[in-house]
Image (cartoon, rainbow, N blue to C red; front, side):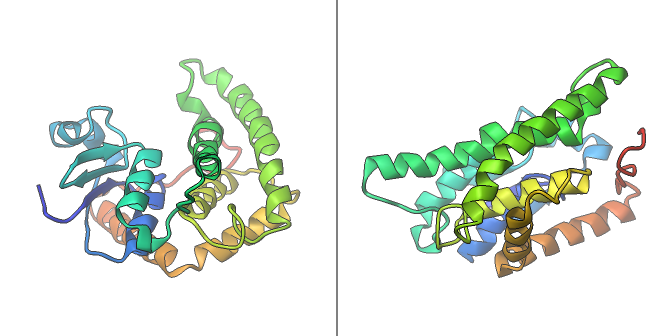
Length: 231
C-alpha cells in the first residue's frame, strides 16, 4: 500500500466530493481510475479494495475506507487544520454537523440515484418514469429546506464553507444535468456557482478531466443520452 492516500474514483460520481476534500487538505495523494464501462468495478483488483464494487474508496495507512460519509469524517478528523467540518466541543452541536452530513448521504444521495439512473432501479423498463418522478418530488421537498437556509446564509453550516458544500454542489450538478427543474431554487443555483469556483473544487475537476481523457483514449467515454430521451 502506498504511503500516500490513494483514492479510487470515477469522473462525475460522488467521488468528486472526496477529491475536493483531499485537494482542500493540500497534502500529496494518488488516484486510481475505475472504468465502469470496462467492468473494472467488478474486477478482481478493485474488489480486493472494496468488495461492494463502488467508488469512492480511500486506501490509507490505517486501511481502506469506503462510503463518502466515512471518508469525509476520517479526513476531517485527521486534518482538522483543513476545516472540512466544524469541530464543536458541545455534543449537541457536533451532532448537528453529522445530521447535515447524513442529510446529504442518506436523504439526498439515494434520491439522486433514483432520479438520474431510474432505469437501473427496477428490472421493468416501464417503471423508470414513475421512479424518476417520485425521486424528483422527494428532491424538491428536501431541497426546499436547503433553499430557505441558503437564502439567509452563504454556506450549509453558516458563514464558513465546509465539505458539505462540496457534497451539495455535486448533488446539484448531478440532478440539474439530468433535467431537474432549477427555477424554484435560485439560492441553490448561486451556492453551486460559488462552491464550484473554490480552488479545491477546480482541482477536483481537473482530476476528472484527466480521467475523461484516459477513458476517451480507451474508447470508454460515456455520453449520457439527452434528457427525456430513452437510453
